[in-house]
Length: 415
Ligand SMILES: Cc1ncc(COP(=O)(O)O)c(C=O)c1O
Image 1 (cartoon, protein in one colour):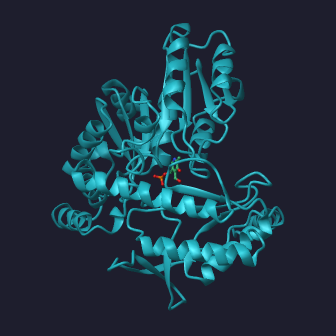
Image 2: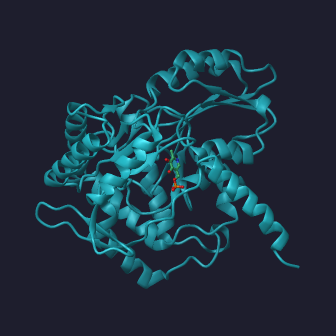
Image 3: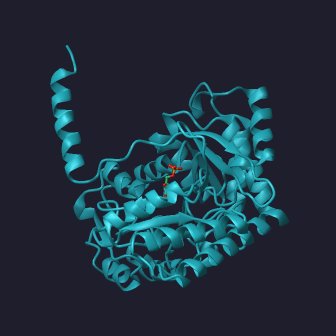
């Protein structure tokens, strides 16, 4: 036996991905993080280069990934409980930091319970497995994250059991709910809180109101689910994300990540105690796979303590201030953005070649950004996604603004 025959097929597949322009570039490898000092935020060194870069593509909105207190919490607990859990949760792979964190997450989101998963991707999949039966019908935003789209497929949701609504279009949510086929017992309206490619957010208050209006039509009701991976610990005065800023605190189920604003790693679901118990009993991506390391759990718990403190509110205010400052200057020099207040600031280029040139010019100036081109975004929507963090200093942001000015002029995007 050999892989020779399979590899012929793989070559064909990779060639096709390349011809479609979808081949991912080789990954850059970070070898060193230089801590902030003075008016310089953190700098990053890449393998094969002596230069130092500013990251404008990090999801670590509050800068907590490099916080010494998280590092200490992770280090200390690892010394006591070990590097890995050595088993899944129900076979004595449950350690104190896991359950302590679940309590904290539930409290943070004002829910009865929470369950942690190895990632938000796995949390979305576990939840979809648990909510889906023959009589479940999903209504899902067209721009939802891949983890939601794929989870519904993996959970076996048939095409006749789901509808996709136009992005953030509440009239369409209503129309889709009104058109749910008879025999449906459970409708699930599922959406990202913040849309990661655009930085805009779901109008959650309105969505929840509409769900309430249709609730009595279904035996199990209409269940609202938000994936707030980019909202948690990034958005809102207290970091409670989209529910906090869009008046959607009554959302039934929240899924989120600890790998972005919280600065650590892992995912979770926060909901009623019964939903959480169902996940424990039935979510394969919880039951049959190891939990995050205790280091991740302890670091996340420490991050939540910081977020809940005065200092945390300061970090949240700072990331907002940074985002608004950057946005104002980028728009002021003639770039197109999408309206919003989130630390994701998309800079619309609307051309693949120019996007690549801009990314390359910024790289040459010591800035890491990500260019989004077709098919990640529709043709004509090519964008550079920038993300502001609380640990970007004013001097860093001014430098990046100047670099955008230079790159924009070089590529003819701005005058
Ligand atoms: C909306 C959304 N959901 C889920 C995820 C996945 O998060 P994790 O890395 O914890 O699996 C992401 C990350 O890209 C995301 O943007």
